[in-house]
Image (cartoon, rainbow, N blue to C red; front, side, top):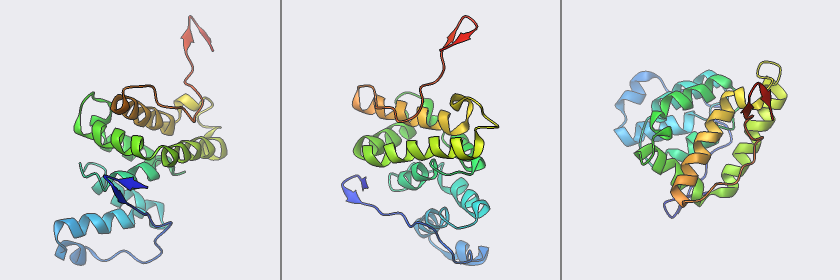
Length: 173
């Protein structure tokens, strides 16, 4: 994937134990962010979430791919943490909306794959809890990302998820 003209690669999973807090504190700011980005792909979902919560609020272009890829996670608490951590994503012309919109616009295949993972995880793990895709936290997140990309390119962004249900006077379509 591309981040501002540079190629970025995200590890599949990290299986190493987390470094202790003293080691993390001894690192410079950027080093800490890199460590947290990498550990946001730890094999333990709680570890992933803990590190994600430290990076999601950062307005750094190179952090964005780690967050977007985590939107394709099956752990609903991670999806909720992303949504909470990106309050500017829904604000027109905000820094967050611009960063995420730009990344998605430059990486349409990556985002399409992420959207498909959101749908697959909903269908496999959460359909019973969220009978309509539009009520699943991943749906709202994908919609916010899509909206950011649309704003960035000035045109509707392709959808790879079920469309939200429209309320038509008590009936759904």
